[in-house]
Amino acid sequence: MILSIESSCDDSAIAITEIATNKLLFHKKISQELEHSVYGGVVPELAARLHAEALPKILQECEPYFKDLKAVAVTSTPGLAVTLVEGVTMAKAIAVALNIPLIGVNHLVGHIYSLFIEKETVFPLTVLLVSGGHTQVMEVKSLTDIKTVAKSMDDSFGESFDKSAKMMGLGYPGGPLIQELAKDGDRLSHNFTVPLHQSPLIAFSYSGLKNAVRLAVEDAGEDKSQYKDIAASFEHIATKHITMKLKKYFKTVRPKTFAIVGGASANLYLRSQIEELLKPHNATLLLSELKYCSDNAAMIGRVGVEMYKQKMFSALDSLDISPKSNI
Ligand code: ATP
Ligand code: FE
Image (cartoon, rainbow, N blue to C red; front, side):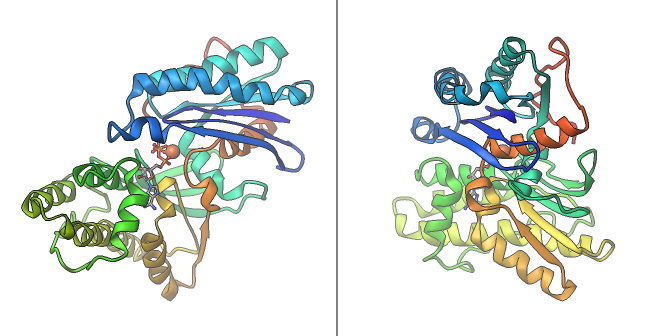
């Protein structure tokens, strides 16, 4: 069995995965959404303190599995430095105490493997990762052959939902709140510009759209009845930006198996628009189970199993955290 730890942002999670079968034997996550909600975003220092409280609590429940552990896997990149350190330090202590190998996992690879929790892998894949920190398209051939073909030049899809929600005083995380508000809104009420629509680049940008939302919210003033229309128009354009760029990309690389992963892959409008886009290509769409879209330790454990089989271990003194991903 592999014990896996996730603490890259505001979720403390630990999982136990059986190596031979990929079976998830244990998974527990303590989310800090409520604590950060009052600030409209994640406060790193507070997040670190909450991990220091939550992780040992969850670990205690894993004690019955300790004797069967073959390795410990932990998210080491990307994320908040102060929160990554919490998980990595705990993983090193476990590796020393139980004399088992340590595996450093890239959180973005984790999101890709959220597709394969308790399942076999399917490759090759074209993957759209939409999360709180990333918006990128990757060609994935295997665990070690991942090529990023498009990424955001500034903010991410998920973060633009969080900031838009904050501007409207809705709370955090903004994704589900905006999605809910947008349901009753008019998607065509606000004529926001699709980012980079005239650029030949296959890349993403959300800073301009965020600013347009800010102006619309300011224009609305005290009239909060306009918020649902702003939310609907924002969600529409944020999504159209992605589908327009993917359409362009598919002209040169035809999708066969396409996947959407990351916390914001839970967005139903994005899912439906991408389904439409894939229809003429007869491509298969893979999605993670809703409960595994947002950060969790099961996906880190699933990568851990693959890395264990390939003996991709880290020495205790060489595994360091890195806030930025090299993928
Ligand atoms: P990264 O994975 O890039 O390091 P992260 O781990 O903080 O960032 P995730 O937990 O994968 O991000 O995803 C969280 C993000 O997903 C938040 O920005 C949240 O608003 C967004 N999100 C969640 N549900 C939805 C939804 N239904 N629609 C849009 N966005 C959503
Ligand atoms: Fe994430």
